[in-house]
Length: 449
Image (cartoon, rainbow, N blue to C red; front, top):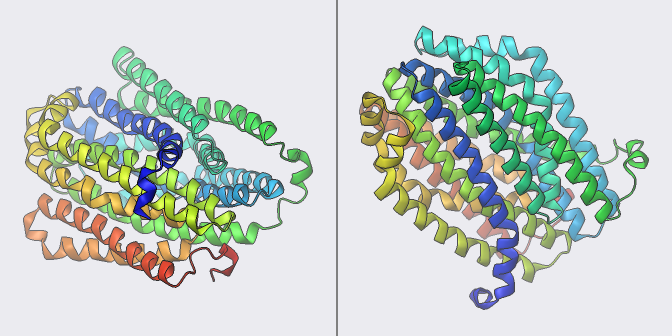
């Protein structure tokens, strides 16, 4: 199987899907860095703390619904591999309908949700105030943000990474420009950062729907009006997969949310420093997700075509390049982390705290690359049950690590996060090795009870 590394066509295939997503995904944490930078240069740490808590709330809300992208990618890639045009059309329309239904629910219930979350936070009154401002504005971008998940997943499943790349890049560039304009230029502070994100989401939706129409025509899919009458067909399959990925995402976000809110109990400077360092972690996440996305699309296509050899080549190629990227990120954090921290915030106390915990971040890329890759494999295979079960184990490990090391303060949080990432990769690796050995990984989703 390692002979596949000599196949230049494999490397071209991996990069055709992964590189556009890596480049575009990096703009997402860069947006977070710009948010932190423009707010971090205001005169009080609680502005940055408020944006950190508020953005965590909105990210948890949206990321819990990330199954919209993941399920759409896996199902559309399998339909593409099987050359089933009717199924490709149905996957998109079903995903879009579900996205807008969920967005409506979020808008209706966002105030009670925010009140409930703040009851469990020991953050200062100032941090809570600005977090509430940020969340109450950002939630109005839900219809666009959730629809964009479906659009990205469907395009990627159709083996087209260029259009999702431009969708992400344009959306985030618009966000960054408006961020600077509203916060620095107009001095709208936290409200300006939130409004910039909402406007960028709707800009992305308009562009994304245009991209879908182009791809639809290029693949000669059935007219969407003809598919509306059959949109209910196959929704049980979609909902079952979404349920399992939702529960998996719930566990994932539980760990990240606890990280933010527990850090807030240690003081405003700690929560601000953790916000800076979490931007580093997001940089790793989105860079590695580029290869995970490639894995999703290529694995889904191979499974749809029932091609075991192609699946094996996909695993080898994406793993090799993921390892290369992880090594580069480790070197960047180890030797340039202090300089990046200084660029994000000029508050001395925040810089000092962030530098203290920076060594934990240097280990993250090599530890976490396995869970990102294996996530891509299982999403492409639409095996949500296995992802759910392994995430439950990893999340339990996160809280166990934190409890055992709780005397270490903020170091305990970062040690627990590193252990959590490691357990995610180990759990999925064990399951995959078993299913690969038993030759059952190419089984269709419907057989995955």
